[in-house]
Image (cartoon, rainbow, N blue to C red; front, side, top):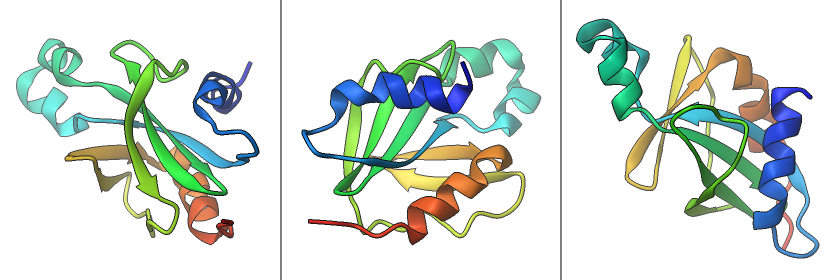
Length: 122
C-alpha cells in the first residue's frame, strides 16, 4: 500500500460524518539540519512524525509517532480550513502549526498545492 493511502486510511477514524479528504501529507517536527548538527540519535529522539489531513471543512494535524508517518495515533491540532499552507519552496517547506514547526519534504509539495486550491465547504 502506498504511503499516502496508508495515511488516508489511518486518518479516516478522526473524520466527522460527511467530511471528505482533499489532501493528505506527511511532516516531521524536527529539521534534518538537527540530524546533521547533533547526530542521528538525537534527531530520532526529538523528532515526531505528523500527518496533515485537509478536508472539505477543516485541517487536522495528527500524531504518527516516532517511527513512521503511516499510522495516525491522535489529534495534535485542528486548524481552520482557510489556513494557507504554501506556496512551498526549497527541499523542506516549514509550516507553523499548533505551536510547532512542521517540516514537509518536497515529495509532498503537490499535496500542499492541492490543499491550498481545493474549495472549502461549510
